Length: 181
Image 1 (spheres, rainbow, N blue to C red):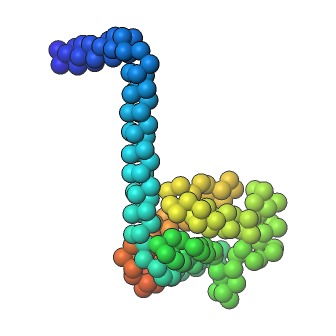
Image 2: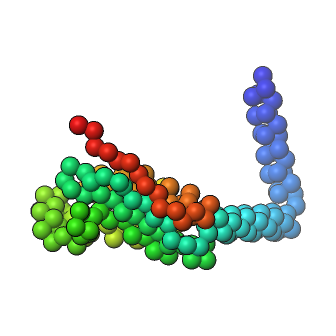
C-alpha cells in the first residue's frame, strides 16, 4: 500500500512537471537548466571539499612497516610511505633477503619469474608503488597479473601505513609473520 502511494505521488509530480514545462514555454526550460546547473555546482564543490579533507587527514612524515621473519624462500617485506603536504609522495614496497638485498634488484629472480609468469619484481613492485601514489588509496590499487600474492600483501599492509599517517605515528610497524610449520 505504501509503495502504491509513493508511486502514485511520483507519477503525479512527473505529470505535473511535463504539463508545466509544456505550458511555460522557453522560460520554464531555462529555469530547469539553471536549477540543474546550480545543483551540479553544489555537487562539484562538495566532492572537492571531501577530497581536500581526506588529503588533510594524512600527517607529513615517513611511515614504515617491516615483517619480523623471512618467508620460506628467504624474503620479508619492507614497506614505507612518505607524506608531504598531506599526500603520499613516495611509496617503497619491496622484499629483502637476509643480506638486505632487494628482490626488485635481483636479476636472476626477475628472469626466472618473468619466464614463468610474464612479470617479475622489477616490474610489479614499481607498479604497485606508483598506483598508490597516483590513487592515494590502497583500495584503488589494482592487482598486478602474475603477482597476486605480492599485490595481496601490499593491499593488506598499505592501510596500516595510511592509518599510522592519519595518526602521525612514525613508529615502525612490526608484523609478526612467523611461518607455521
